Length: 506
Image (cartoon, rainbow, N blue to C red):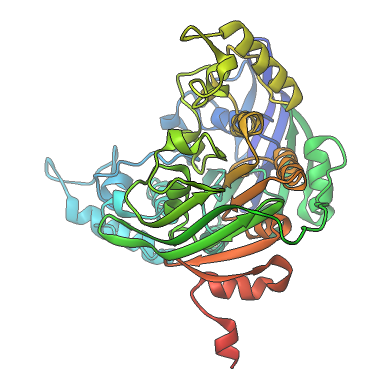
């Protein structure tokens, strides 16, 4: 039986079709992956199902009966809930208060807080969620916040659950935990739709898959009919190359950046502890680790955001210890770890974000203290074309682009302003396979041309594929550092969890 059927769904924004006559269906009690590149129309289609966007034409059937869904409240009333990529939670409320918000239990005319705690605990126990309903949401990790959103759907007794890019900011361990939860929900008869572009996870969790490309339906397949390569080719519309080719790393290349005995306290806790690293010209140094083990603080030191640490930070012969971000930008270009917070300004256009941070450092951008807007817009047009950034042009607001295209803009800015030293922090987080292929290719080109690249990523496959050497962080220390080919995946995982496989074997 079809739990969801969407027929002839069309939606345009101006002259651009986000959905063009799409037929989509999901069988009851299955996990279905809605797959496509950034900007393919996945989220638009699901926002229509959830009542956030009205289609220009088409109809929706639930359990083979036509329904009209004009708002999220109507979607929830029809048993549909959606967990958005950017969680809709209030940090200064408890887990239970967030979940029951808008549908609170009452004792007389008063909010029954204790009743809410009990009810949420019962639901959490049923699905084996390790979570405290009394905990403030602001204190939770990203993975636990996602569980709060799923619990909210279960509290509303939703039978159809839509997850938008559910693993975009999760660690590998959190992804595994999420998949266990989803399989339990499936066993309980829930129907789950996952909006994603991640092929390995689609193959691991989905029963079937629908592929969209540029607002059009490409096809619907049982997961048994496809593999990662076929999915990638269908998504992008061409043969996708998963392999990375790079020249052998040269020995005795100069050190471009070094950190010696860096220690940093944050919120009263030791975030970095006597950390030392070097990266050479013509090298990609990968930094791996479970999130929360000092990666973000290391990024803050490297970019000049943190200016209160002990130790020495050298870029070439320049001592940049405790220098600010503007000074560091003269030496090192970077891809921000969190593009929404530090990669671009939401109210800026593409051309403004293309020069963000560099407008006072590059003479060709200013004349007598004023920006050369005509020249900068032409540069932005050239970069948009060269980097296949799907946008209406330099004047479009960057925040209106898909995540992958925002990331391409940030990478294009980095490439334009880099001077042989690059920090790539989570460079492919939340982007599709085509953008991943492009970003990986550009990092390899930089490395092969003699640049030094520091790659910090939660994607272990990415670290292993691109890096010449890998440093593993654990509790703010370098737990292991060696050539990439000298690690097995099992050893990497052990070091990331704080174990030393060599000592344990001995």
